Length: 418
Image (tube, rainbow, N blue to C red):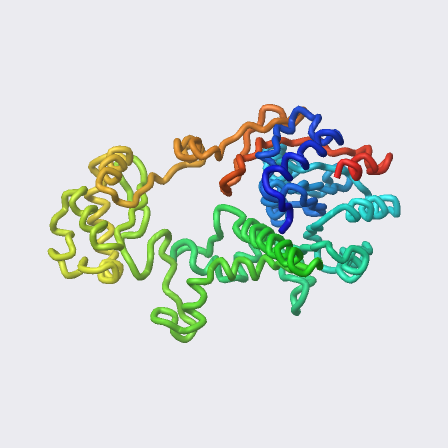
């Protein structure tokens, strides 16, 4: 629907790009087979910070040509001062500096949109209209263009014009009310989960709009709110409250319990001799294997009525968890990992960041990559794409400096390359 024609088409497209000069930079390690299923799709990226750039990064990983439009050398983008972080969100994107406050910059953006399939932005609602690039004008001038807006609260509703950041969305969505421990203050996620989630939903929306354009020939407007996205992510939890099922009656909810489940056990991170291990034994055969591995027959489901089912174990968790951790305290995490893996039990060491990045599984899947770039990007490492599609190899990450000359000399060369 977006770049049909199969391998022969991709080879032809690759040769056109190479002839036009797009592939002459040594940082671009692409072939016709590794350009991705979105090869031939051009995305103009007006985003900054994290939510919007996550969307366009996904599209770039899938082979789209993404042109990141920056103002004043990414001034105001909190990700820009740290090259390692910035490289994560600009990976495999062209970069151009335009001053969208000036007529020349707006004219250059018009010129880019003449060749584009998708426009993505994450300004506060109202800013695009003020600049002259609201959806009403966009769809009239470029009827096949897909425009995606990512914002805190969306383009409609009483809060649409409010500013928002990740922690605000985590608070308002109810996310913080189920995270952490009951006797401690509310706590958010250790990552910017609202930003990342809304960026992923935005990418899904763009892909859906591209599929729709393949049927209708018309563009579409994709409106993504961070609040909507995080609420959707919490769907299996929030529908319990919405329908007042057991434990969520009359607006109540189970107390916060860290990594454990209020309705099933074992499902938690448990302390060992030298660290923590995550164990799950919800199915009877897994729980039986856990009891056998830790050599505690008295904890078996048929030996103690308190531990007969996942629910009874959760109901007596104040007894169950100390008993299991006492058994685990006699060996190291690595020793237990070997034993539980041999028994086929779902388990995992609680890693630090450094330990996680050394996991052989991640290395085998190509999730750790060198960045091909110069200047401040030289010698950096970054993360690969978790999306693997048969027939397409993972793209080699590359990063380039912004083309500041475009603001002064126009973007004819870049436009021609498209």
